[in-house]
Length: 390
Image (cartoon, rainbow, N blue to C red; front, side, top):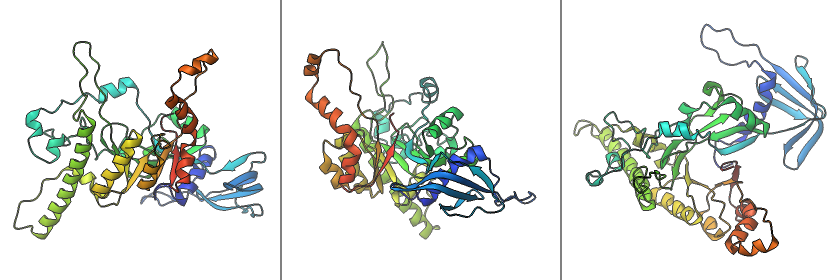
């Protein structure tokens, strides 16, 4: 997987998530003062076909779980005397899938109610100088950036409250853990790695902050019959988006240097102002947190890589599905990719002659898109698959 959050521990949690919903185990865990400890719980799944890893399967195996953890897997594993035995003969058990880029998107009505268009910056705003006021990240009187496209302080760990039916649908497809990502803005905030067994954040969140997310795309244009389409928010061009990203990270680097100088000379100067947006970017600027870049196009993927190198970031790229067009750019980047499996659908044309009207580039896309992930692996790049876009 692309980063430390998707480790062996995550794989164990993923498999356990599949099992925890029907078994409702009590776990012996640390409890607050005044609370009686929960009793230990041991379960044994006996007689199933277990896929331990690709290419390694065991028939009629036994899985022993103790206090919410898998402690033994094998064909000759002894069943503990205190275990509750579950006969799972005829079933296949495998580690749950992890989706590295999952978005619980809101409906159009909910999004419209939350994301009212912030005003487009005028000329005075653009010449006011550097800092987050220039970018609109903290331009409100109370320091709020809820209506800005620069919201690095946004945390999906605080917003995680998915619909129960959405979780059930994911688990039915074999997904037991996911990295839940923010889905709006340019600098979007941090994702959260969660187990898909519960919509309660206190039970579901495995790691609160995994990646900082940056999307190199312009805000959507507003539709209006009375006036031409105008940008929904500043910046209104791709060049402006890149400028915003560069300036914001430069401001975060400056804030870190400014705070370090103040710590060394507390009596010689004024205390620097606190900025929640820039403070949230500090782990990314120090390479303590990976930055997941959404380039939107194969050429922009190359631009995203060079931008991350300029800013000194630890990048992960969301694949565009078109890396097959310029595989040398992906090879040169040499960074992990999260790869969607959203392929273009080939239509059913009524007449054979209709195929003559299909552009050659469209035919190439239909042919090459399903092999995009394999191409990246042939380039010796680390990848993880995602349902993003489906």
